[in-house]
Length: 405
Image (cartoon, rainbow, N blue to C red; front, side):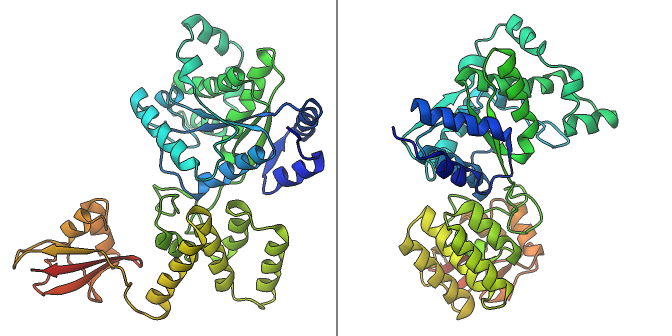
């Protein structure tokens, strides 16, 4: 394998990175890889508790793909064992533990979705139950002896809870140690993660050193803000753009982001080169370009990445038809109801996938996001009108044609 020159690798890998720790060790590892022609082991820990991936996950996965393209080995660690422990991860309550079966199922889903970004070459999938599940209690005690409580309390979340006299279970201290053992098990050279994982990543370096290995370098990527422009992208906050969103939904959601997220999204979730990004930024700053047009370019690029150029063009046409020309979509899904049967609108929304639950359907109605033939629905117990045909619209992009026979 002929690796690209050092400067070429560094230029690509530093792009968009929030922090590299320590920078000199990172450079040395790449230099050694070029000299020995041995690829680096690049580690990414995958959380199996939330298998539905979105563009926030894409930020670090795209960086991992860059390492692959440079000739290095991507190692995905599916945390099937650590998923049974639960991790605070900056939250006030520990993440609910999962069963081993749940973590395996979610881990497979994670990999299938991640494959939309990662190359299937130079990738290794490992489950950390391979090594953590075989540790004896004496091994756990030995591991725990290599890190102090004082150091654990340096983690912001633990420090705040300790100061506020909130309980911290001993098993929570084991989570970063278990994650660190993943680095030991695969002899990680570089570990990737978001900035919210900095503490765990640093513990990995310390434990590798304790087990006689050269500590990994750390490359952290920034957290992507969601479509509301305020919070980290999250499914629970409903500000996410999922890998599995339809092209139409993906395009529409991207056009809904605040203008100040256009450049970060271009840099973190697309391959748009820096020259083009600078051109767009300058054009928007000098009012030579309406940010809407830059956003449309971003939306086309993202849809093309996850689907195809043809899908991106069709999604843009669909959006223009709905919102610029104020017309209904051409291909509206249909459902047939019989006779004069009385049906609650919330039931129809749930049964046809326009809402995930009745509570969500009611919330959407409360937000005036539901209409029948353009008339807003405000009553939670509203019955479907007795008409031969009508259009149910939920939010900005979901439609259902209802036909009575």
